[in-house]
Image 1: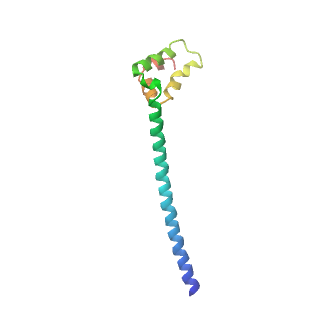
Image 2 (image 1 turned 180 degrees about the vertical axis):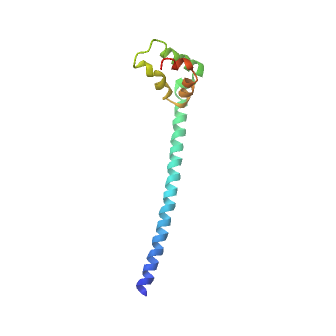
Image 3 (image 1 turned 90 degrees about the vertical axis):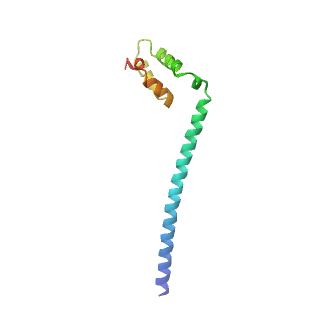
Length: 104
């Protein structure tokens, strides 16, 4: 009887520990999400400090178009794709211009 009682207590304790693990895993997931969002916000704010971020979209687009204005070599053909992978804003500006993509 004593052994059965101790087994039941251990099984109950195991159940509580499993529940605790599940709660901690959920808390870890929430914390990781919060950390990721914090890092993303910090990166966004850091990017606003870079001088090129202060250029209007029209000026940025003019620079991009100048970069692809000469006849493309194999390497230069990829310039619009490279530009569009720098950041969200550059992607939006690049995708909005048909002139950047005419040689691809």
